[in-house]
Amino acid sequence: MIKVDLVVLGGGINGTAIAREAAERGLSVVLLETHDLASATSSASSKLIHGGLRYLAQGHLHLVRESLQERERLLRHAPHLVKPLSFVMPTNQYDVKDWQVGVGLWLYDHLANRGTLHKSVRVARKDKLLQPLLPTVTSARRYQDCWGDDARLVISNALAAQARGATIYNYVSDYQIKRQDTHWQITIAAPNTLQIQAKLVVNATGPWAIQALEQVTGNTSPYRLSWVKGSHLVVPRFYEQDVAYTLPQSDGRIVFVIPYLERYCMIGTTDIHYHADPRQAHLDRQEQDYLLTAVSRYFQQAPHASQILWHFSGVRALVADKQDNPSKTSREYQLVLDTQAAPILSVFGGKLTTHRSLAEKAVNQCKSFFPQLQASISACTPLPGGDIQDWLHFEAQCIEQYPFIPRPTLQRYMHTYGTRIQHLLHCKYRLEDLGAIVTADLYQHEVDFLRKTEWAKTDEDILWRRTKLGLSCLMSPSLPF
Picture 1 (tube, rainbow, N blue to C red):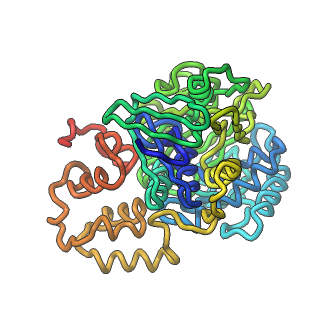
Picture 2 (picture 1 turned 60 degrees about the horizontal axis):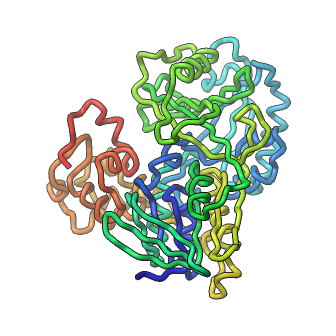
């Protein structure tokens, strides 16, 4: 029997962030995930760390301010995973007026306070940033937000939680939870029999939050979630400019074209209501046509269907409201604490950018049950691998220390692991020390490292969530691990 303060259900970005926050504040924590960490919504996002320009127009100033503050923290605390990215938004099509966008971006800049990113500027037609666009695009605005590796942010939060004593279990599909007076009894049947007793349960299961709450408590929940599917295409890079493009559409939605893994572009998202199994979400023909048409309205050399290399879809659970347009459904989150007998805290909604602040508020709500709860330190603590003061200096050090690693592979290691590259390459002095090449630039040593230190169990865990090498291996035969 293991006795802990907190059991977290769900190994996505919110669940792992809450596990980290609670462990850092002195609580004993176990996290349970039925599949792999980040295997659902948290690896199927647009990969953006942003305030949300469109939320300004919807009046969600609090959400935008909170998001921009968290964007700055992630830039400081996970510089290997979160990078600044410039965006260009055309302003003369579909009733998108330049002066209105200018006012919105001015407010966006000021809500960020004294951020590290550049302020927005107007872009004239002659600027090279507009060269890939159709001649009908005569004006635009450039602003900065951030791109982030969503799945590795999940892994980093899990690593931070583990470093403070939390226990992380993934692929735990067979378990039961029962209320017993003032505590919870969790029985795990597979892969190994385990009994856990917890004072409080956190339900951070994303799209399954209502289902999990009703199963655990045996009561019908008065809360409702709106499932919104977002689909993305990945195509070969079709412009040279090192920027992303924000493309307003006639229906009020926005489609992003984002440089992805150097050689590709990611196009998304669709934002449509969804009612089927979230794990079966996939791109349909209507979404494909929508995204390709959205890009063709702006770009001279727009991609076509035969160029699609990969596509993915994720289902975001949003707090239900009366909006017919999923794009306008609020991204505000709710934290609901049920104190009847043993307490359970449910997380409804949320977004990638605000995972740390959501976690801090979630653990704060549990304070009355844990008098020993310490003050939060997550706002000023780097994520594992993120203790980098100067990226160029860090890069130079790595090149000097590991000259035997091919430069593209070393770059990937730096961006994937940050300063944890020292653990990955500990006692490695020759390329041969990394073992055989499994596929692409994936060596056997990295496979072993991911299995040993990052809960990776399958080829999909390694290729699509831990390393992002899946695109390089789409045409490869079955992998030998």
